[in-house]
Length: 56
Image (cartoon, rainbow, N blue to C red; front, side, top):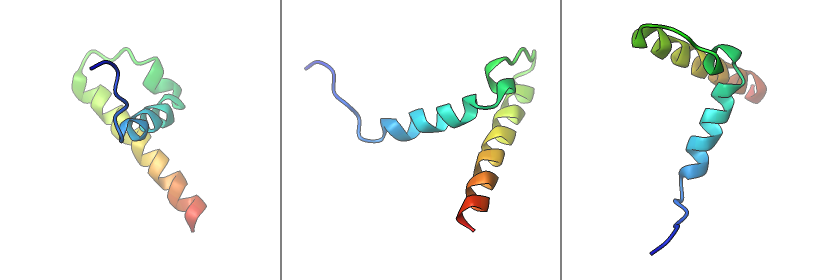
């Protein structure tokens, strides 16, 4: 069958690219997964807030 492009893959890749703008997301060395998850949540919240600010 070979390689097939998935229709929503770009959404996931775009979201990861937004998260990688935060240096903490790229260079995280947290021992607990809950702390890493909190940083992901904060980064995504920052992205959403900046997008809301641009839209309004």
